[in-house]
Image 1 (cartoon, rainbow, N blue to C red):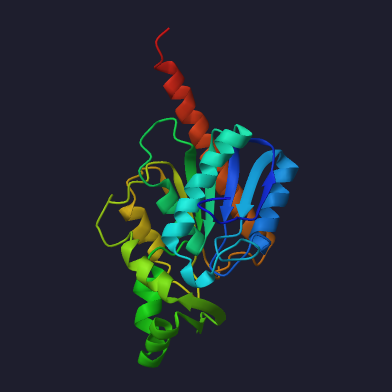
Image 2 (image 1 turned 90 degrees about the horizontal axis):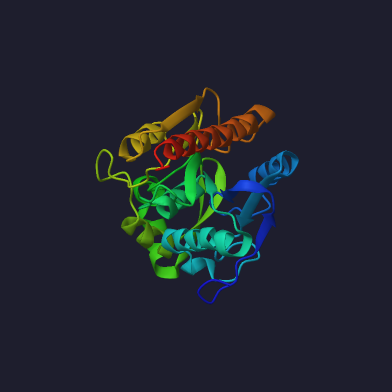
Length: 264
């Protein structure tokens, strides 16, 4: 239970760092990516966590009241819960779509070298999408409906989505890409996987995000024919697993150099 609401989650004990998956918009913890990454973590002995967002799946709350702010806050508190309840000192956040936006806000501001979030993997991450993509594309009638009724069904990239007034209004406060180079205070290693055939977001968003991040260790992988979901075949998942392993290697290397600087 977090701040009076219940989050339903799946937790798999295993080796650190915990792989914490954040689903895409309107997705639950039982989606294809969550299931595939959980299976990989079980097979490789890694710890894994995925939770239904507030207002989604089996978690409590009204979806009309769900926001990026709330989801990011819940994510940060679940990271703390992993440490206090399961002695998991390190976490790699893996965010798909809107989960990439949530991931970045949860990771912001970590300055301690022993920060719990040791890396982020964004899969077609779409920060700011409600403000820069969705809202400009809505016609006047749809805008009026979502502001009046609080919720509207739209088609985006050939798929149905439920967009709310709360998401639109909160999204304005949670923008990341409008403040210039190195303005997003995420210092941990970041890996971004982006399809060039993405039907929902421009592929250049990955470049804009890379420029906006404070982190220097940022790698973008472009997939020539990759769609937004990036889950069409086994190669899509292999790229995710490799990105996670690359984060782990970067963390191990950083730990090695920190150990050399410790006083004897």
